[in-house]
Length: 192
Image (cartoon, rainbow, N blue to C red; front, top):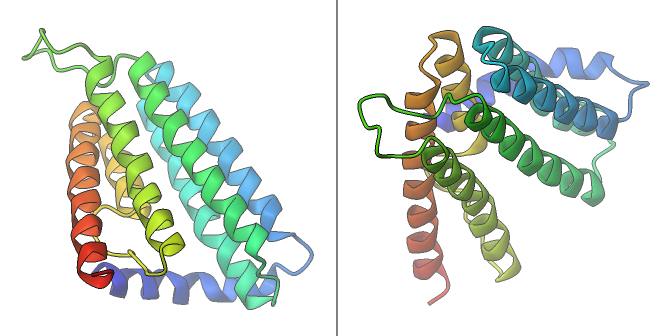
């Protein structure tokens, strides 16, 4: 199902991407990172609706940069590398902003420190990317699992819009670790 959504989004973005000729896709990547850092700032200030809106814009730019590169014949290995690195920085910044703002705490579980769910979400998010990168370095692909970056960002955006960031972060943590284990199992089968 996620693959069908990805295809639908690509089809929607393609006409826009074809018209963006004079902009380097890497510029869009860096702009997306900057907007995500600003979203992190608003999470830290507990202005969650603004943060969610900025995440939405950042997510659009994250999809647009690759589409612009593909549609205009400007794909490069460096562009893919830069996009991946910027995505990791953006993920960590957003979650750190939410932790700093106290948005990852659960009042019903006061013994769990507010930083703990956010820290697990950061580790899980980074490990999703890392398992894929290591699989590719080992000679296979690991683009499997329920918690790819787009899904995690959508969850955080909804969490911001509905002012349930703590639950969104918890859900991101859970699906991130599920995805890591799905990828480990997949790579184990393919590299035997």
